[in-house]
Image (cartoon, rainbow, N blue to C red; front, top):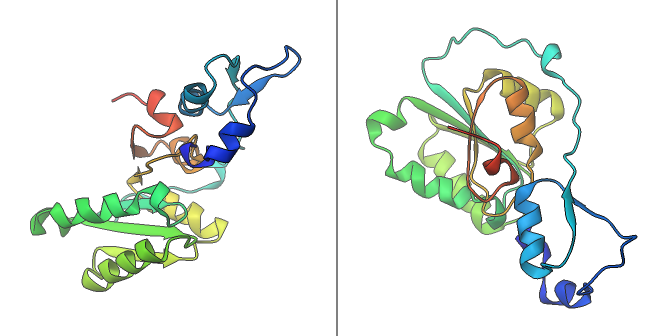
Length: 186
């Protein structure tokens, strides 16, 4: 991720590598991010593996009238929940009333946490906020009930939540600043 490349880290990285050193990254976004700093590196992609848990999740028939969206990830600037907040406030009342958004993640940014808390208080019918995140079983239940995962990240090499969501044939909307952006087609 861009956030990893502090001035000190980049200064410590050699300009060239010996041929017995191999660099692997989880996708094109991470590859391009590294090559911006060290264009001479020979970089290969190595996608991570996650077990296929889709057979263990019973996806119910749609019962809720509202479209169910989820944002799962640490609450911080890099993950872009503030972008979501701005977009949510631009929705018309008519559209907003047709949607429910579940947001869950460990709090890293108090400023974004406070904004999400206020949003959940102002729109309790539409926003369900779980600071501190959810246990795996609850995330699986959320996956099964949601219609679409929103990944608003400003800087995210290869979010696992997108891979897990896609196992269930769910819609994903992600920013261009994720490793999956180059893999997802309209």
